[in-house]
Length: 125
Image (tube, rainbow, N blue to C red):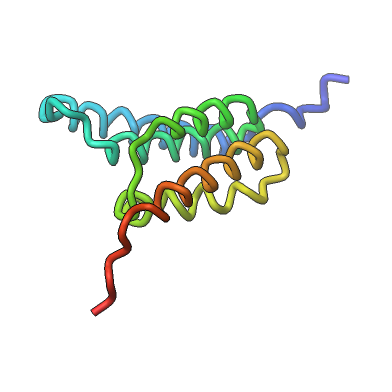
């Protein structure tokens, strides 16, 4: 039956994805000319979060998982995880309905916790 369009994204989803892609393209164009020789890991976080959000909205778990796995190679510290919101974002994905997404998110959080246990924590003043 051709009336069953449940698997096709609606206009709002397409508009949101288009807006995300346009924002990402504008950001890339804006930062491309002033990119330092050594890439700041913070530069990779917003596009990665947007890519994961887009993939999950479109129910593309494999794509979201692949992007999460790329974060495994990111040099993280407390500042990066808190300032970019990456720590909270990935932390929430540990409870995602897709078991692959939640497994990769759990693995990342576990790795980050081990790294951060070695790193000295700033004291509150």
